[in-house]
Image (cartoon, rainbow, N blue to C red; front, top):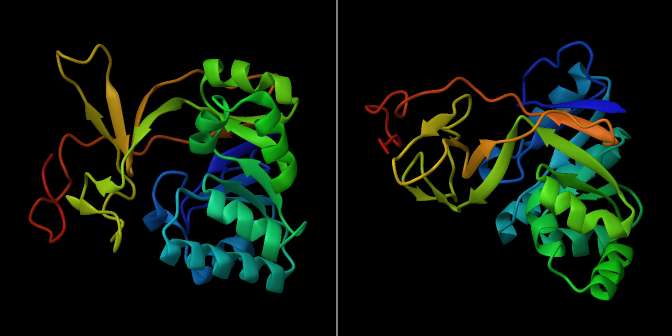
Length: 237
């Protein structure tokens, strides 16, 4: 079983993890630049996975630049894809050059697909694994017989493209959320939500023995409000 950790560009991967996930499944603003990815590759000798969210045209161009970087450097890369446009780009322009895993956003849609359609979808795009953090989703995907990566300790609940940290649409992100998570509690909601990036999470489960890879996504330090409300781009929630 592979042990992976979600790591920000410039972060040091702790001992005991053979793989690292860079980027984000939930916000294109948290994708690394080519320079950040290259520096991470130089510092970390293990397997690298690039997590990608739903993508605008501009964000898709940025992912293409990252893919070309990995080809130039001769470094293996696994792509976690949530955008069908990226899957089509990988199929048409980078066929067979990168291992492809279906991200959590897309897996939540695939669980609703008719089985014959889903099998054709998997075959067309060369999907070899699923990213999962919800036992119910895992059960729905079991008929496809693919390996899965299990993400813990938080479970994705929903996502937005309107940045709740900067109070604007996510384009032009200044990464003001980087390094923080915010607990959200209300008497109208039966459990605590955690805001991290553009996604909302609930408490999940621990690692799974049946997973091909367990991905530890360490929650950043909690804050009660945006760390510095006086800084341009920051707003209280």
